[in-house]
Image (tube, rainbow, N blue to C red; front, side, top):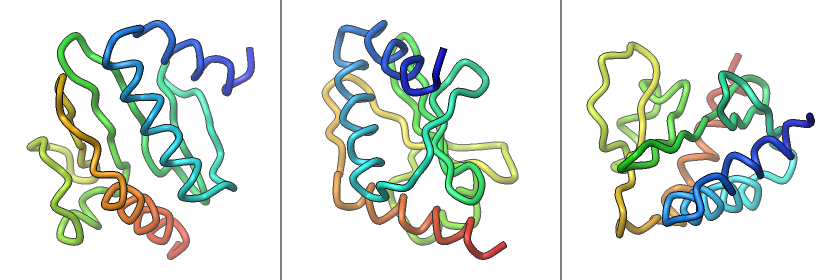
Length: 119
């Protein structure tokens, strides 16, 4: 099965607010960079461009968007709201009723892609 189909099915398996939020985040990612690649890794949607940029996961009471090089950009954003023990990753957690700060998220995605281009 192709990654795009797996991602769509993953989102559809969450017919509540989590699925809607993941759909919105996916659309924002694709709007930010139309050449970003959608992949399926570790049973989760992953977006890559010159390396992995971010992944999204649905949990029982929240949705998590994890940036693989988040530690390198955490000072440039106020969106990361999940304390991390990881040396590299940082996450945004949404609970039911939380809003997506679309323009800030798009800016963060652009910065994360630029970090991958610095290799």
